[in-house]
Image 1 (tube, rainbow over the protein chains, first blue to last red):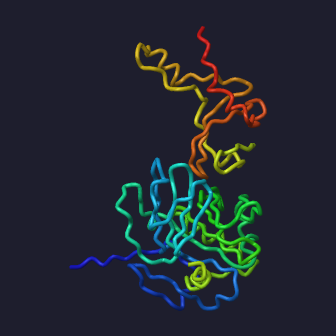
Image 2 (tube, rainbow over the protein chains, first blue to last red):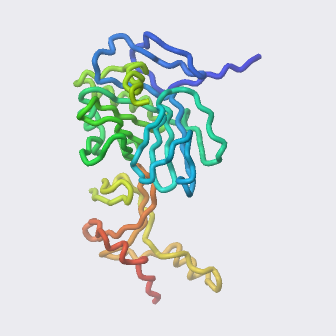
Length: 212
Length: 95
């Protein structure tokens, strides 16, 4: 008897995806019927995510990328996003979605299966987030990509603003996996008046590709 | 009821994002010649003053950092800048 590994996203949207792909034991939704022009809510929970903690983060370079010196600063390189969270902690998000071996250092923890990972992108994205959080995600004093940690729909989240209001807004959001169902429900409910639709990974990849 | 606290990393945030960590009682006392009574006082006794109190807080819903700040307990306003001027609250006065 062989054990087949199946990794499941904690996110389920109402409509079924029209195109899916099996990737690293995940079933990844690539496209939905009637995605429209946005805004879009995209499930990226299959993207590998690591938590990294060490007393001296400066001496480490996850996948060859230097960790930002200041908390709240993010760096995007080759499809990998590194968010400095505090003095001793950083998050490594592989936005390209490809499976990557975790480095052997003990400071790394794979949190892919422990968290839910969503993208809200498209026009009116900030109007949607303003209904769910008092955090100023559209702060003109900050240059994307930047990290804000705080409650979103009353749930502690890591939120990265990848692109601001002057372009096509792109907001990434990660929180504990157990909140996935209610978080998606709250975002879709808040975005209903703005035409928010579930979308597949292809919409996000299309946006990310020129940045890689 | 709420008030604002200033996280050293995230800036001013709603107090509901934070967890209270107790009064700042200074460094842990030297265990040499420390009586059980003094240790009990250090662990359990608080000043509970009406006025400025230096306290530990954790940004629980945010970056997770522990920090100290001063709060005026009579009006629940953060007394910004004063926390850096003091090492800790004055020691308890013994009767």
